[in-house]
Image 1 (cartoon, one colour):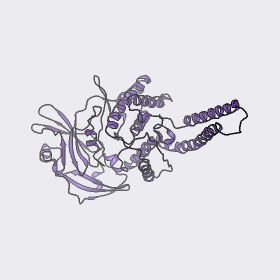
Image 2: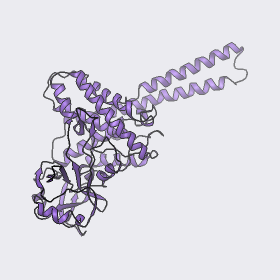
Image 3: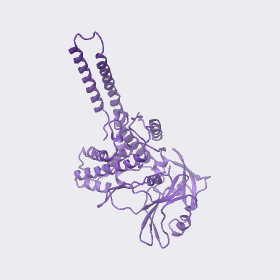
Image 4: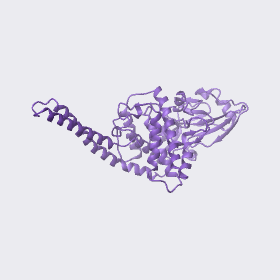
Length: 428
């Protein structure tokens, strides 16, 4: 196996891979293991051996799990038909069983932590999660999904934008936000870990070093910011709208992108929300509609945000968790932009101007937040002075003067604090 052989595969990050060599690890039956060396680190890659488009290959590999750990449902191969279908991040097959059921089997050549199975274990009705699969060394090798139904929210949003129906576009984003919030309800009920700002900020540092950006941003995060199980691949292209049922979220796998970027586990729910914002930005950027209102992106982001707030638990939407001075959603959108730039470099694509513009704005945003700290400091001084004036002897001749001073200082503290909050990066 060489770089030249893999170069035509759409999932292969040719822009950063420097060498592919056989790995020492013993791969599951039906696969070979390779060590993929890249500028950003080394990854273990699996690749099918033999004719994986034939039922014979699947009949030899699936019944015993191929030497890996098989879990959940598996297709009934007797009398079934198989065909390969398009998939940009690996290989995918559609298997039609003799009884009429159709399953989709997704092969992941690279995977970081078996997140597809983890999402399946959440048993959330919101997710179009895998119903079975094959794991090896804690990573997903195969994920088996039921045949998906419904229309992608991204397709419907694109149609609404091109038709100029902005009200419908906002409604689509609102519904997508509600769906994401319901998923986060299930995730936070299963897992809510304390703020881990050190690890989150360290990952930002590694991303900045990988793409050699001139930006640097860290956040302290609040106590209401909890690490939880996130989708990791959220976007409006993965929100499926159904005629007679609640919307669902697809793309429930980790895959190549997360494997080549710095690893992470539990992050705040707002990371998925930030991914939704970037999805909206891409859809608008790719639209053929040339007369898009200047404020439409902000309105669509606001609709996604209000929909999410309507269904998510109180903690992730609290004022403290959304405080832009302490990270809020903005720091996670920054992370998403860094990842988009990294992906453009990895797949040898031009970095879109919208990403360059976003990163160029970061220093101005940080300067504004730095100046806002002055307001916060003055608010603290006024509040402390108001408390001191209550008990400071001999400073006032009359009780009326003392009360007036306390009220005036308290009002100044409140106004300064209000101004400080107003200058924070907004949640959308």
